Image (cartoon, rainbow, N blue to C red; front, side, top):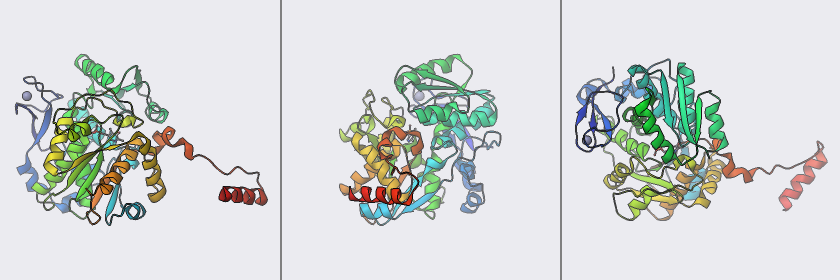
Amino acid sequence: MAYTSSLRCRECGREYAIEPLNVCDFCFGPLEVVYDYDAIARVISRERITSGPLTLWRYRDLLPADHNETIDLQAGFTPLIRSRNLAKILGLDELYIKNDSVNPSYSFKDRVVAVASAKALEFGFDTIACASTGNLAGAVAAHAARAGIKAYIFIPADLEHGKVLGAAIYDPTLVAVDGTYDDVNRLCSELADKYPWAFVNINVRPFYADGSKTLGYEVAEQLGWRAPAHTVVPAASGAMFTKIWKGLNEFHDLGLIGPVHTRMHLAQARGCSPIVEAFLDDRFVVKPVRPNTVAKSLAIGNPADGYYALKVIEASGGSGVIAEEEEIAAGIKLLAQTEGIFTEAAGGVAISGLKRLVESGQIKPDEPTVVYITGNGLKTTEVVADVVNPLRIVPTVSSFEEAVAARVGS
Ligand SMILES: *Cc1c(COP(=O)(O)O)cnc(C)c1O
Ligand SMILES: [Zn+2]
């Protein structure tokens, strides 16, 4: 049984029973899950976690759903890789890459969907659905296929081919909407009122969002039970960013790690940076924008958790950083060519953001830093198509040697 007691409005504090509900009836504020931390503290320990499965369900005591094998694709517990080459180029002593691009459907969205869909089954839904910027589509479709339930997936019509195919392969009902993600999300909010479906990021959003806490827990555990000095996190709605912070702080409050002095840095692309612009202008009101960026998985112009993300930046002494559009492909290539990790455009944003933070002196050489790589590069091959330039030969040794000489000479 999950150690949850209620849902609570983040604005007015009103409490609700654990139900598929995401908005306060009274003030329209977002709801979040309330946990019984006293009960959790009585059972949780490092030993109990490390003896659990090598998936995000090792943290089940801190998740709002019960583990359900029928839907589990074993998301989470992805590698935390100590960077040598990139660290050296950037002049950092202790840089780590949280490689979440190797989840079952190749993005961190498997974490949130694992939790949301397990909860949806508990609630008795037979259909899961979502409004997606791309990666959520694949995660929802894959989990629905695994559980043998129906999926309705709504995406903006202009998504990358790799993301559309990466959802369609699981045979959901895939709906391409002529509009932005924000249009898709608005439509889905209306549909969620009308159809008895679990929209993972709408009516079951409080449970969904807490799946991202595991990105905080895992990094702390993998660093040897400590919080890093800095994290760099790509953001769309800002939810994952706030939940990494929540996860680190829960671990401290439960006595699993020492004090959390982590500075949380939020990265967005120039073509959709409403949260970072608010940070740079020193305001807590996020002004919606119309996205125009190659980082489509981050293209949310009206971010639901923007305000809360700004509060986390403030509380942690972090910052917001913008990756210029033309730096995104360079960031992808830099990570691939230094560390052997091929990320999508969102990862390019994170790497470019990391570089800027080091160059501006906000991250110092001796400070342990974790950059979150949240999605796989094979989903956004369009962004880096120019790397494809093989030596073209006929099958003879001399042809090979001529081609090498010509390439080296050029
Ligand atoms: C969805 C997504 C994000 C951002 O998640 P939010 O919680 O909406 O901020 C980051 N990276 C990738 C690859 C994503 O798919
Ligand atoms: Zn309220």
